[in-house]
Length: 570
Image (cartoon, rainbow, N blue to C red; front, side, top):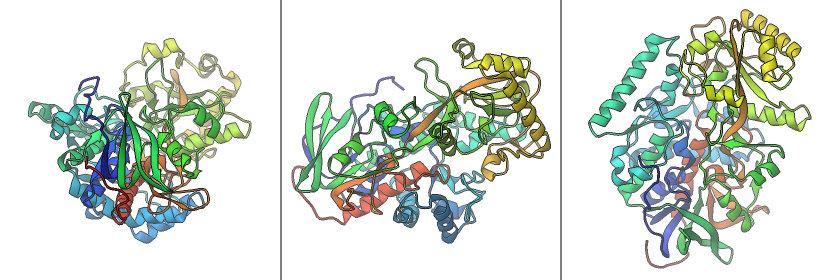
């Protein structure tokens, strides 16, 4: 793939039925609109198609879809409603998550009809809060099967690259990742998966196929659907402002390479431009004055869609929230390396600047970040965070997606001070810069609890979600083992997958003003809209899931609207 994407279509004054701003889950809105017989245009701020979706794990949490049903997932509509009612509480209007449940199955089926993608159930990937009523330890998460991106033809070079590249061409799904991470501990289960994906990737290239997995597969599949349908996607095309007639949104001014054009949208505009991931002043205003966020969201996510909606009186909610994710502290221009399974695996713990544990390390990543910010808000900040582990851990598991078992930690990490190593706990504490007495006591207590298999302090390993990323060969608790021998510590920062506070919308994805009135002709989905699940993350892929579903919902509502303007077609 080239490092600089090709130019793509040239922007011009034009009229369409629906304008979609953003090419992540916004592509679902475009596909559904086209299927409804509407003329659609997608505009994307950056040079690549795919948005943060292409940088993600690509899972989607949409209960009740036909993939789950076909693969025998034990579930019921009542159980899902009980679960969301318990998890969301009063954090978001019930009409939002009820609409999500009502239309989820049809949204996924729309993707099956309009794209070459096929999906599978990530069986066993537990809901994030499975102990709640209706929670599922087996999970409701689905993924796209490895997808051959060669079907994109010349458009392949406009697809956004992924975050992590495998050492050899191989499409690694999220379900594969769980077992590949345990390649040393569970070779009989892990290595067949590794070999299967390696053969698929390397063999595919020999046959002219380009297999992708995760978020890249999902983005590529939707992009392929748009290409097949003839829906244009303008890249390098930023939203300048929305246009209106009276109180109705009729289109937008778009700027491409310094040129401004007007796109008239007869039915309306769908804002799918992500959150305000890379707007540091806004993040400090709404989230924390001392926050130094290291976001994995696409670089174009600077809150343009939210600002455009607010300029017309659109309300906002949950601006303090993000899809938080702890990560290895970045060095220089390198991006963050997220820590998912690493925090759950036995032979490790996390400490704050006092050398003390402060959380169930295996908790879901959004809850992890919320606890860090809660501590700061209550005057007991976590400060520097460290993931501590021993040599046996280092010999057994993949770290940060690129440091494989028995590989030494990169020398650049030691040079930058984000990794330290020592022969005992007190020496390690000195090198971390935490109080030795406190850390020694923490390590001693943790080892005692781990040996018993019960974390009475933070309950690590009690949840089915914790255990999903644990080591099944370790008993009685797959998340706990005492540390011994040579010790390591890696500094951790609070990263995120994107913000999830944004414009207030109703059950049809229509933007709602602060006084409760709808802004006619304006819709918001994905991270441009306030999280449909309030302050919570119900399961893996809930962020992508709601973007896909509300893209479908917006298209259905747009199709029911009368034409607001006329003009030349795109």
